[in-house]
Length: 281
Length: 281
Image (cartoon, rainbow over all chains, first blue to last red; front, side):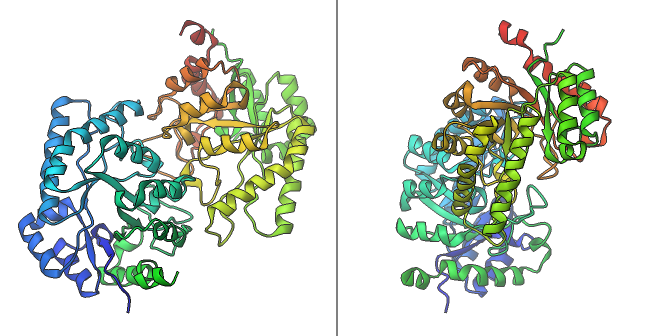
């Protein structure tokens, strides 16, 4: 028997399912947790979703994602902060360990990444008291450098870990192999972060060729990422947090039935997430 | 009048032109140099190409590229090294300052980037005596992380600079803003490299959105890269080497007439490459 108690599926992986369908579908196949997205959560309603997740016995590694702050308009920036406060409360209500921070890239017409990155740091500093009082960590997720312009200007593990160092308690790392696998400093970064600051570890694979910049991520095992290498690093440092599969795939997995995607996700990830494997390693 | 004496066009930018057409077309519009590709060079013949380039008065910042060494087959690896020796000789014959190193990504079926990167270092160490005796530098070009799997496992400026440190004389950096602009450590890397070790500086732009992973690079000015920021860093450190525009663009520029591409390249790059601008800065 597989031990899937640390294994979660991020619901974007079964994009066509509503949140209630995902909760039911994951729990039925024995998955331990669910990564939740804000728009699906809002569609169901926070209170109702919280009840369903609790009844299904699922843990929630993360709520995706924070609202973008890539604007140099003060009112729009403040509005984004307020929306993020609402999302922190929603995360707390469903028992999510963290709100995944994806802050946007450059503002419209902007070319200065340093300014954009400073603005993100300002926004996080402003949210930190709310995060602490909500008991929900700000989960900094370095996004692949190919998203620096439009989706997130947080692009390396080292960069995000330095941000965590500066911001302190109430922040942590969301490490996704899709975004970080190429980085010569990724393994070193995981060791430096330590088990306490890695809030969730995302599983995915890099396809060769990649046919779409945004939505052609691969099922675990179908690409070129050496996932077992990272599992070994995580075991070495004593990481005992979640493993969360997250796949954006308009060309393949989003076209399949959710049942099949869940079944194959489990098949592919079980050898990586099993406690037994860890103990025998 | 623009001073285009440091300005080169990499011939892939005018992909539909033969090498003789590119030499003639660039020289006619006053461009100072030409970045040459091996397949075009072979089609013309090295001796003939060398004569035409010399007669046109163009400098050659680089020959693109080295043959891939992403194979774990010893015979295939040795064959790639021999091909690279031939390319070093060809580079010397046309007066190219460097052979641009693009070594391939993972070998077929391979998932271990550390092994791939060590193999690249071995290949460069093996070629170094030949590069030194040919008087042609091995130009390490960090490629964007989105190419780590299939095109090059050299993916950050810092990683390549460390390689140069270990290999020593006969190596240098080819810095391309397209590949490095997102990197929080890029400016610091340029300063650390210093003017001597930056062999060529490639100009390009990052389009938002990017519609194709490999061949949708933008004309200078059409994207989100803050090129003047990097020009300032290069001036600060006393860089006086080439500025070379290089655009892979099957969706736009490769469909246009070469004359137009050259004209617009000059329009867009002149403010960046003019010595006058530097002196007035």
